[in-house]
Image (cartoon, rainbow, N blue to C red; front, top):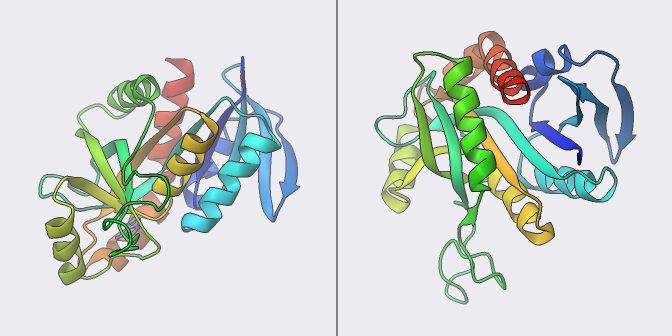
Length: 232
Ligand code: ADE
């Protein structure tokens, strides 16, 4: 079977996943550490992309070119946007939009120029598997499916969060990497799925909520979902 990539932006989101790997080999490429090994007997490569669209896109391209991965899973945290998406909930992305992409008036707002697309879908089968894994791993936790917005901004004011909700009413959550990986996976025909635990509401309290969630909960949730994905 082709190797599966497991990606997160920050160490806290992946520490517990790395702890599940028995004897991984570390390889450094382009300033990233790639951990090649197995999860539940399946070949994986685990990597921290770092934060933001450029870091995520270059990491995804390396996973495709250097490691020949057959699919990419992203795990981490996001800010909740839609009213029902609360701290501790889980969001599995059906598609991604870059909320900071704006080449208007040459191209429509949000459209990625020369792609004719503003939304990049995730793989439906893989996303379904990831949702089921989240349901099983975190009983009683709400799992939402839908649009996720990515951009190179940590959204940390209620005013900016409201503006995003008005501009993209379907967006469930906001983060900083998913749309970039979705675009690279689209380019290469590699199936992609992403799961995010909500760490904050992208509002005036986002900063403190994010820091405490990333410290206490993020890694456990990510590891529980990833483990269930491979074992289930
Ligand atoms: N990831 C987690 N919370 C976020 C926020 N409020 N904005 C952007 N990315 C995030």
